[in-house]
Length: 527
Ligand SMILES: Cc1ncc(C[n+]2csc(CCOP(=O)(O)OP(=O)(O)O)c2C)c(N)n1
Ligand code: SF4
Image (cartoon, rainbow, N blue to C red; front, side, top):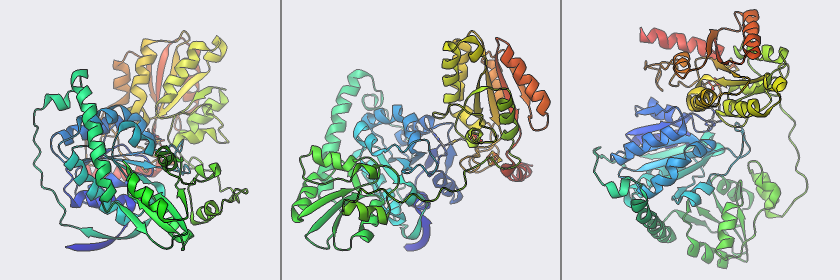
């Protein structure tokens, strides 16, 4: 039966997972990937948030080792966190299909960098798919599971912001379900990666990749849109749509499986046209792969490495236009909501002249006026480690001003190991960590986490109590306070802790105002 629906790329991936019998969807929220597991759950699929992407992938690996079709989702920077298991699961392979979805954010609509995760496919040695619209997101998800199971290898599914969030009509193939029965087959040589087993496993991975390259040469995963012999474009992902619109006379070679590449097929295409250019968003990744294979192509000028492409930018690339681009008028800068519980905390840190080692969440907006109270922000969890480094080397007067600020979801993600280091390598002046606990993952759209007491679908779950964990880890002082309700008390407490040589954590607790009504609703449902 074929059904059609209007779906975003994220929804299409989730729908395909539901239609093909995925048993486990696991991930950590991050724009533009968050909606995938939420939609999968709303369809009735089993979806869960992990505390971070590394754990998500490990849970996914366990599920796939147990012969269950498994989807793991994250944003691009999440794959850095999950890179350790990623590289080794490429060696072990899996029983059930394992699709690892990375949602890249060229142009940084909501990210701290615009890394191009196609590089991970080469580095880890994983086949990679890149859809250009929702229909392909649907079809390629089904295909990725088939390939993962046939070659017993995880598949990297790289999708980008425009495809994640744009909607188009999707025809569903509801006949594709694989009814696998989860079970665990003991096979120590393929699943225990000690060097003696990992050495042959690496060779086996390279053999699979060579076979996959061969498969890709003749598969329907490469599509030629033939429109003339003069000019050829090689492209993938969202750039396919831009190229088809930008140059009606050019022939376009669309690569859906971009690793391992069908190099012979690409070479034939290059020979069939007078001039051939590679158009791609982000790094000159495809360009470099083709050049390394000795193929004669032109790439894009360096200025188009930055930001998203569009039909207009592709037109400029095609004519080699490197004149300065029109800069769109600056929009209104983002701000903490009026009434946001984070506001008082930042007012206090500003007034006390603190050096604030920040983290990633809504509260990163503490960097903006009128607060201007954040001095560093690197990656999730870095607020604690970066501050400890400062505390260890700065002169005493400056060291005493350093404070870490971290949100509750970020604390669960990667704050605990920072606290372990604070206790273990205690700085001479002590340290102060401020956990801004607003009971939600606000930045990505109010997701639950291990400290909210609710699962991904907002039904009740066991709750990790932040202060209990911190106390158990041996921190000298643990205080809980609502800075909005008690601003003077809060300011006095921060000043007191900074003046001591203790290691201290203050949990600033008050719900996000946007989450409050929903939390009340969930709590009532619980009752
Ligand atoms: C490795 C990584 N994963 C995911 C994200 C996306 N992300 C940014 S902040 C954040 C969590 C924010 O929640 P919290 O720390 O509770 O702060 P809040 O936004 O609620 O103030 C997430 C998931 C990211 N930037 N990096
Ligand atoms: S969504 Fe919530 S946490 Fe984020 S700025 Fe608004 S009130 Fe603050």
